[in-house]
Image 1 (cartoon, rainbow, N blue to C red):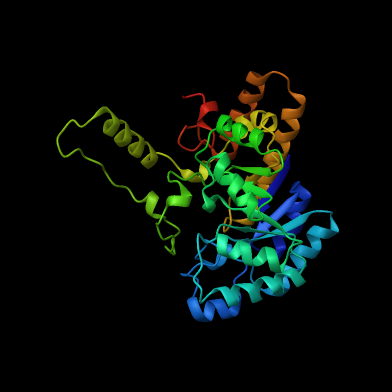
Image 2: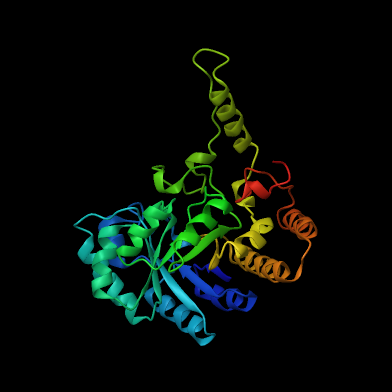
Length: 319
């Protein structure tokens, strides 16, 4: 199972590759896009500079260093959709990054996918989590358009993922892990993540109250779950306990979250997940494996496990 890490700076390339990353992914905003649309009209679902590779020269060098170690780099171009006005600029942009040697593109917009497949058939095309492919039918539809790899949405269980991978053995699938667990379903989320303090709308405290107390059992459960998020830190997102199950489910890669996160944290996350991928192949006692994973989570985040921040809460001890 391949380990996929975000990268935002050239200086991160060697530490991440040395720590065990098999693939790197990241975004780069061309000057013409910034001039016309600014970062707020995000080209790749990030609206702050710290989550962007700084220059085309840096992008070229990152790709070169990845290739020098036999690894790969995929460009993030995963806004849910782009306008007709933006398409010519996007095509020129991809042409330029192809000359830098990128190996693949992570995207969601079907129109962009169809154009790029004709223009650059040699690239590997990944369906982003923003494509919201939550069943085998939708995954098969994207595959028919040229997708060969799919990033599962965060809300699926491992069992649901395994069912989809079993029906579509011709595709490669990646699952998320470690930091950035979100309470919302990304492919359906319309919040704008533009706060300079990086406080996202889903992190702003609020309270749900029934119009006619006490409210239905379903509403009460929703109120309790929302209140739980206010007591959680989504940056403690984990998923280590699920690695053995993800391996059995035929997952091609585990994709670490963290574009815009500090370099030291990215490297630490890669080392931690690499350690537990190895351990999952060696440890036959699942209970003992999970105990070690929970202890590692506590050391990494100085916090106990929580079903809110666990990417796969079916494996969380408090469920």
